[in-house]
Length: 605
Image (cartoon, rainbow, N blue to C red; front, top):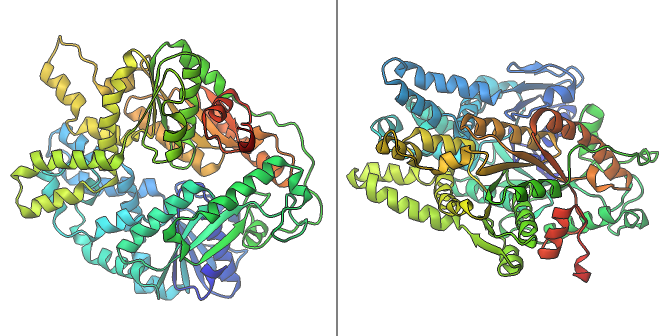
């Protein structure tokens, strides 16, 4: 593991949800501590299971791990940190400003940017306080701040006045109000992050095109603010053998060939690695094989960074009762409505685009008029869907085009009354991720009007926070309803989203702890905005794919508790889509996916 060689004092592990950051960070902490170093492991992961992994209760205090001399752990609760951070900003104005203005400020401070900055606020002491740095040889951070957050913390100026005067836009800069007193501390912390002698950033990804592209974006974002030296860890790669311990080598033996699913997934992973984005090619890279067991306990952690070796075969296959229905059952219900808006939401990498396309082509194949719109840049959608099926219309919303148009509109209106410094602040504000969501939402709103007479299937929808922020800051919905007054009826985009007769919101996730937690948080966020999800889809389920290789069978068993939780606690309707041997590209493959069948091999399509 090259990322642990000559490790500096600080190691940050970052990557999208579900790639295994916590497991890699815990295993690294154990290895360094067992090499006789003093180590502090700090987690800001909202799905942190560090305490469960080590069998101790940790929480927001430094806790020695008795089983690993030299290792201590600390869990920073992001939500608690964000709540305390919000109260420090809102508390002084509560009772002084009108309740509506206080509510607007609170909503500006309710998004992901606030949580990131609040968590960063919690561990800046660990980067800059001499007492902390003297106490440990290494401090490891699970879930590092993004390049976007660090760039925001570098910005000069008084954002409080800028926002209070109402010249800022509905974006992510609300969290920065009141940060002036921390500027020096943040500057020191950012300097520590950018110093490779003190800090190493480890990008964790899976051998999948989407997660590798996300890692490449993070790499470029961090490099742009001075953090040039990064390591890549590709986690969870299928080994060259279907049975752990059945031998090594690069060739796939007969054991893997006996499970077509295993062989196909491994070939897909190897293809993704061969096409790794250019920005990551020069990064030192380590590869961690997928293990058969959950990463709980010291034995599992010690083995994570090593090839898995077992002395006996894993238990034979058993009949797995997978809760939920096939995707076709959801399509049947959607069809019964005759028309409407179908929005698929979820974190990146869970397969929203593919599932949206599958639903759209299945409806169109039944003779129903369908408009599929997506922000996915993948050319295969254009190649395989545009004009390829009667009754189906396909459009792609280009986020860059929408952002440019939205930015120009805001600068032409709000920016026209600002001086040069104010315009610079406003333009910086408009570079935030929230701006993209707002701009794309406006494009979606234009398309959604068609749902009165046809089916509109939308991929990559805005988050519940963005919807609330639009509503709370004088968005189209509130402005129009206020200006029209009583007695005049108008259906606004927000009202359409809140009406279950007009809109069906489907949350997409994977049968893993972190993606399920992230989807549950999105559900809570949407419900705050008055939007109740209609259904959940658990995608790429190994348990639903009926594997035969021992390794995949063990992974399938690990999915069952997550599937039961979603089915019993979260989803009013649940569809489970199996992990497919072949990528579902093209009309026949998407129809097979919607019908619950494995697509035909590419060679016969």
